[in-house]
Length: 73
Image 1 (cartoon, one colour):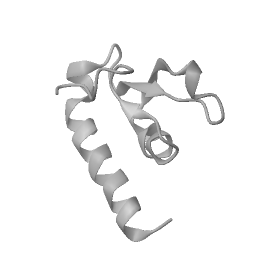
Image 2: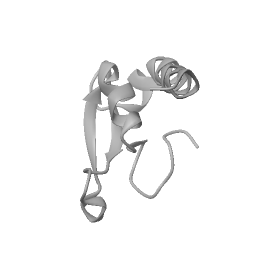
Image 3: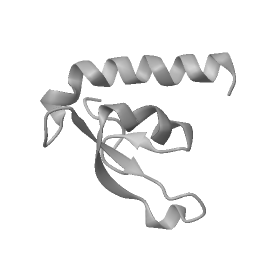
Image 4: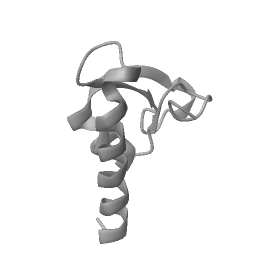
Protein backbone atom coordinates (compact mmCIF):
# COMPACT_ATOMS: atom_id res chain seq x y z
CA UNK A 1 0.00 0.00 0.00
CA UNK A 2 1.33 3.46 -0.84
CA UNK A 3 2.45 5.73 1.99
CA UNK A 4 -0.06 8.45 1.07
CA UNK A 5 -2.99 6.01 1.11
CA UNK A 6 -1.90 4.50 4.42
CA UNK A 7 -1.54 7.97 5.93
CA UNK A 8 -5.04 8.92 4.75
CA UNK A 9 -6.50 5.77 6.28
CA UNK A 10 -4.72 6.34 9.58
CA UNK A 11 -5.78 9.99 9.67
CA UNK A 12 -9.41 8.97 9.12
CA UNK A 13 -9.12 6.40 11.89
CA UNK A 14 -7.80 9.03 14.30
CA UNK A 15 -10.76 11.31 13.52
CA UNK A 16 -13.20 8.46 13.99
CA UNK A 17 -11.61 7.39 17.26
CA UNK A 18 -12.49 10.76 18.70
CA UNK A 19 -16.07 10.65 17.43
CA UNK A 20 -16.83 6.94 17.72
CA UNK A 21 -18.42 7.04 21.14
CA UNK A 22 -20.67 9.93 20.08
CA UNK A 23 -21.99 8.36 16.90
CA UNK A 24 -21.88 4.61 17.47
CA UNK A 25 -24.39 2.30 19.07
CA UNK A 26 -21.61 0.72 21.14
CA UNK A 27 -18.52 2.23 22.79
CA UNK A 28 -15.42 1.71 20.68
CA UNK A 29 -17.48 0.99 17.58
CA UNK A 30 -18.63 3.01 14.60
CA UNK A 31 -21.17 2.59 11.81
CA UNK A 32 -19.82 2.21 8.30
CA UNK A 33 -21.38 1.65 4.91
CA UNK A 34 -19.99 -1.76 4.00
CA UNK A 35 -19.74 -2.30 0.25
CA UNK A 36 -19.08 -6.00 -0.31
CA UNK A 37 -16.26 -6.48 -2.84
CA UNK A 38 -17.78 -7.66 -6.11
CA UNK A 39 -21.33 -6.86 -4.95
CA UNK A 40 -21.73 -3.06 -4.62
CA UNK A 41 -25.52 -3.35 -4.97
CA UNK A 42 -25.56 -5.01 -1.54
CA UNK A 43 -24.13 -2.02 0.37
CA UNK A 44 -25.39 -1.94 3.95
CA UNK A 45 -24.55 -0.43 7.33
CA UNK A 46 -22.51 -2.46 9.78
CA UNK A 47 -21.17 -1.53 13.23
CA UNK A 48 -17.47 -2.33 13.55
CA UNK A 49 -14.65 -1.82 16.02
CA UNK A 50 -12.66 1.34 15.44
CA UNK A 51 -9.68 -0.98 14.94
CA UNK A 52 -11.35 -2.39 11.81
CA UNK A 53 -11.86 1.01 10.15
CA UNK A 54 -8.57 1.12 8.17
CA UNK A 55 -9.22 -2.28 6.59
CA UNK A 56 -12.76 -1.33 5.60
CA UNK A 57 -11.77 2.07 4.19
CA UNK A 58 -8.97 0.39 2.22
CA UNK A 59 -11.47 -1.66 0.21
CA UNK A 60 -13.96 1.13 -0.43
CA UNK A 61 -16.31 1.23 2.54
CA UNK A 62 -17.28 4.67 3.86
CA UNK A 63 -17.97 6.08 7.31
CA UNK A 64 -21.61 6.55 8.31
CA UNK A 65 -24.83 5.59 6.60
CA UNK A 66 -24.89 4.37 3.00
CA UNK A 67 -25.64 7.16 0.57
CA UNK A 68 -25.74 9.76 3.33
CA UNK A 69 -22.07 10.69 3.56
CA UNK A 70 -19.86 10.33 6.60
CA UNK A 71 -21.22 10.64 10.10
CA UNK A 72 -21.24 14.24 11.25
CA UNK A 73 -21.29 15.84 7.79
